[in-house]
Each structure stands twice: as C-alpha cells, then as structure tokens.
Image (cartoon, rainbow, N blue to C red; front, side, top):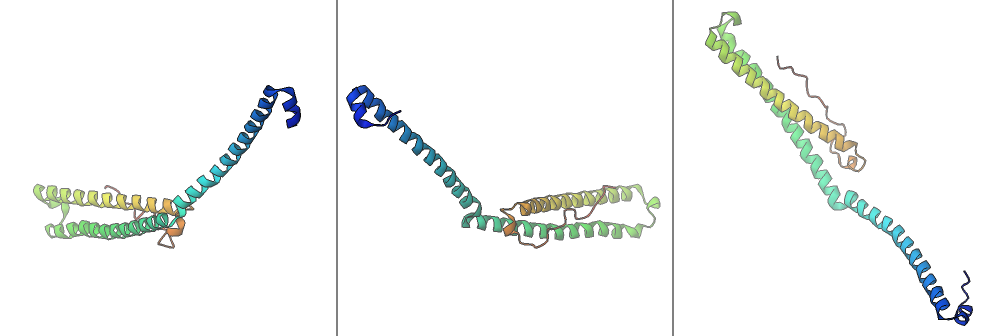
Amino acid sequence: MNWNYEKAVEKGPISLFFKIFGAVIVIGIVISAVGYGLGWFGEAAQVAQKEFGPQAALQKYEWFIDQSNAIAKMDQDIALYEKRVKDIDERYKKYGEVAKWPINITTTYNHETETAKTDLLAVVSQRNNLVKEYNAASDKFNWSLFRTKPDKPKEKFQEYSSN
C-alpha cells in the first residue's frame, strides 16, 4: 500500500478516503494494543494494592492476632475439659471397684464420662481446625508477613479416642 497522499488525491476521492480510513484503522489498532498492555499493568497495580496495601495488611495482621488468641483460648479450654474428665474419675473413686457399683451409679458415671469426653473431643477438633487455618494462611506468600508467631502451632493437639 502506497501512503503517498498526493497520488491518492490525483486518483480521486475514493482513493483518498481509503488511504485516510486505512490510516485511522492502523492508528486505532496501535492505540488498542497499547491500551490493552497498559490495562495489564493497571490490573496488576490493583491486585498489588488489594493484597499488600495498608488496609489489607491491617486486616491480615488482625486476622492472625484473632486466630492466635482463639487458639490460645482453645488450649486453655482443653485443659479445663481434661480436668473435668479427671475430676469425674476422682469423684467416683469413693465407690470403690467399678464392678461393684450399683447400676444407677454406673449409669450416671458412664453418662458423665461420655459427655465430658465428647465435649473434650469437640473442643480439640475446633482447636485443630483453627490451627489448620492459621498454618494454611501463614504458608501463603502474601499472608506470611503478618504471622504473629515465629513457629506454627502444632496441628494436632493430642490424639484422643472416644473409648
């Protein structure tokens, strides 16, 4: 394609129109390509702001603080529930050997023990789930900076069986 303007004028208005139209199309394509490329940079800047900006940093830091406090509370709750299970056993020692207990005492003991152990297992399960969330978040490259503990909490508090 010859871009000589004077030759296009000599050939007639249709030739001139196609020359101008072709130039507009080429300029439009170039501008579109540049705009598309700049859009990628703009979107990358938005993502960086969303993930690493001051508001995001504060929210992530607060999330780690909240999770850390919740895990510490669960650890304390577990100690209380473990004590509850031991206290039940201590309270029923006065009846002597288990095989010689009257049926109503055996039934009450079994019910209290089962309830206490079930409650303990529930709290341990909740604690382990909180720790998994904490550790999973601290493994993300954009969250690890805000982790409040240098070492991750243990994933399993203690293995309990329902027996």
